[in-house]
Image 1 (tube, rainbow, N blue to C red):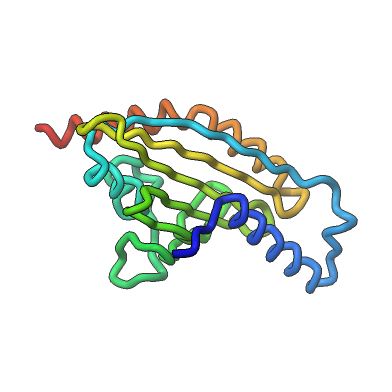
Image 2: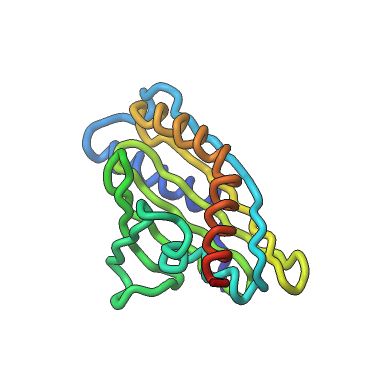
Length: 182
């Protein structure tokens, strides 16, 4: 299986956006500097890998990510987590189109990319490692790239939010797992 890596995904998506702007008569070459950031964090899921991994698919994440995480699947139908899935999420800045670029359970590696039109492209690289037989370490890397000057502020804001995501994700996952015990 050919592996796609998050920087390649984000670069490809940013290049596609630039080509689209060029085709509309807008020159990305004369644009001001576009921001690109990367933030990494780890969370621990107190479940074996086989049970933890599904919590990081778009459908599985519904269990712990809160009301704002409501993926609307374009593909596949009926909705389920798989490589190549395409879905939308409503963000405060508009609808984002997401693509599950890699959903490799055997390799313990997922990659997502999403677009906020005219603003930014984000890739999310998720890797799993068994901490012990009953818990899984999850390493998450967000790479955000502005595709237009208006996207720079969004990249800055989202990157700031990414820096607190580890604690937020950990609390949400722990709360979800505690609720399953009742």
